[in-house]
Amino acid sequence: MASTSNREKGSERITKLPSELLHIIFNCLFVRHYPNKVLGGRTEAHDTPRGYANTEHAHPLDFVAATCRTLRSETNDWAIHFLVQHKDITRFTALPRKKKDHTFNMLRGRTGLLSWAERHCIFCGRNSSRSAILINGLRSCAACDKVQWPDKITKTDAREKFDLKDEHLLPQRPHGSALAVKLEAQFPNGLPRIHYGAYIQQGGTTVMFLKKDVEKLARLHHGDLEAHLAKREARRTELRRKKIDRDNVKRVPIVID
Image (cartoon, rainbow, N blue to C red; front, side, top):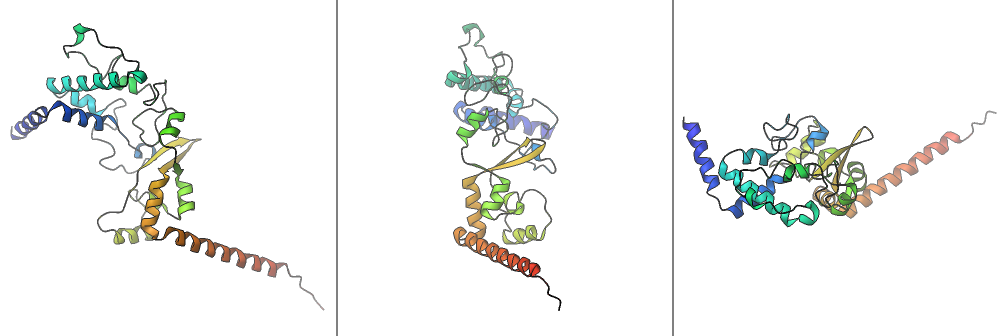
């Protein structure tokens, strides 16, 4: 009984919030990103909300709207405002006056915002089933993805261009290496993380980052990045020179008297 009473009190506190604040919360809930869904393996607790993993079309706002009549009305108002505010993209037309009693569902159905967002690019409104790389809870055509995030970099390029390892780039994933142990000791309050996305390409998984985030991370780990990369290149040059010398020695003909 106590837990039920606490839930009811919590619901009452939420419904007492002003509409402006509730709509800000709904805006945050609308944008979802679960990169571990593509990468597989261990999933962080905050990556996939409880009860959503096995529900294909579940969305946090669906559950908010189902909580009570007040929140259903608020989510409907928010959805209508979003659709009208971006009507040049959503092609939304005003509702008939008789439907403004909030008994309908503006999240789902033919004109619902979430249903529309599952079938259209969120940036241009064209039909699309492609997920945005860095926000995979939203649809984005390839052209808009490049416009919105023009400076993306693959994990392979991040490793090569900034001398970073998987332990630096994806510390939230299990590694168990000596470097991972060293980094955990170096950052006892938690390793620095950067935003990333993942998608399947030609049967393999590609991980993407924003280049500016990778550069900032590299400076955090390496200090003077330019000097660090120059030293790395000098080491590589020296190793190549030694290899050439060894190969030349092997090619020297052996003369037998």
